[in-house]
Image (tube, rainbow, N blue to C red):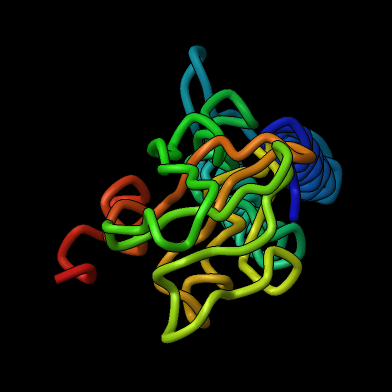
Length: 183
């Protein structure tokens, strides 16, 4: 699972690689036609339009290939890493912590013993051990959690022994812009 910082770097590097590839293709076409192309402030001609098309096509294909290679959200890629999904810690909602199973009255809670999480109540018919529960660190990027939601309706967010909260499948879809899929 990648952090928001890693996604930003991957988006920036992939965007810059696509930009350099597109510029190199335009330069290659420019050199192929012996520098006769004009496509800018001074005017334009057919060779200049071909150079521009070479840039747009190669840049677009490079962005598509980079997105598939580094698996970053489109907004992160197209903004060169300036916009990234929130972290799981920011998206998590508080979760009740209980000391005894008898005090469990809600739908979902974490069983805590001496300040250490031991299990999760409400995920199934029995107590799910903490080691088997879907738990991610707080700095994990929200977009990286999609695979976990195929297996579980919730993902718990924790740093070491500190439980930060829970993200439900519906909240995840809403935050990622897929609100209609959650219904």
